[in-house]
Every structure is written in structure tokens, then in C-alpha cells.
Length: 155
Image (cartoon, rainbow, N blue to C red; front, side, top):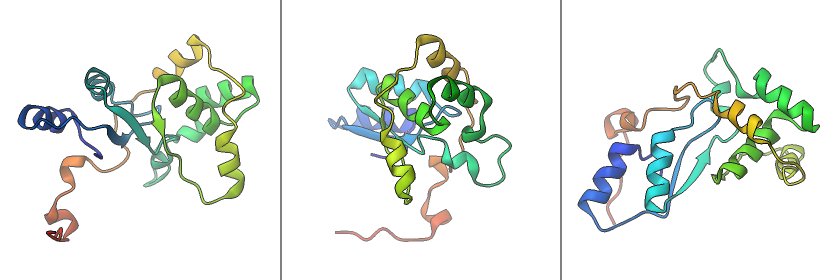
């Protein structure tokens, strides 16, 4: 499933016998959805991050971009890595499935360069402390037929 928030997940679990395998959600250092991640863990659901390096924070003239964050850049400097690599490593160590997007071969290669270093507990805590609780993408409740104007065909 994708973009289920706690209320959606509770309803699904209460009204059906279906326990999803994966919930793909907006998840990056600025928007961590801790309550939802806890529900995933309790129910054996994999948390999969879309926008795992906070690319969504670069759109719409946001004041803060994860790729420019001083904390992430400082941690990256300690490891000789990029802020993007630090964020992907954070996801890996936190047990998330992350699906970074890029069409640039150099960035795709960079995304794989996260297996030769490890973040320590202080670095993980510093990244965890970046959570603003502010969603960068659309609120899942706003994704309706009225807003997106396309009928979903029936099988």
C-alpha cells in the first residue's frame, strides 16, 4: 500500500483480515512519521520510504532542504560522504526500505556508496532530532477524485 496514515491502517486492520506487507510513505529526516513506523513494526509491515533523501523538500520554495542541512552536511564531512549518502545510510540502519530516485548515472552510483561506513548512535540521534513533523508532499487525505479528477476504472 502507499501513503496509509495511522487512521487508514487502523481501519484496514480492524475491518479486514489483510495485513499489508509494505507501506510506502514519505519518510526523510524532516518527516519521520514515528507513530506510523511503530504501527508498522507492531504489525510486521515494512516501512518503505519514498523521497528518502528529502527531495520533496526541494520543491515549492521550501525554507529548508535536507540536502543543505548543516547537521547532515557535518556528519557527511566526517565520513567523506554526501548528505544524500548519510540519509540513505540512516534509512538502512533504521531498518527502512528506501527507494531513491535519480536519472543521473553519477547519482545512482553515489546512492550505492553507503555500505562502507556506519553512523554512530550520536549521529543517528542528531538525524532523528531533525524531524519537523511537516509533510513535504500532499496530505494523503487530500488525494480524492475531486482533487485529482480521474475516475478509477473498474476491472
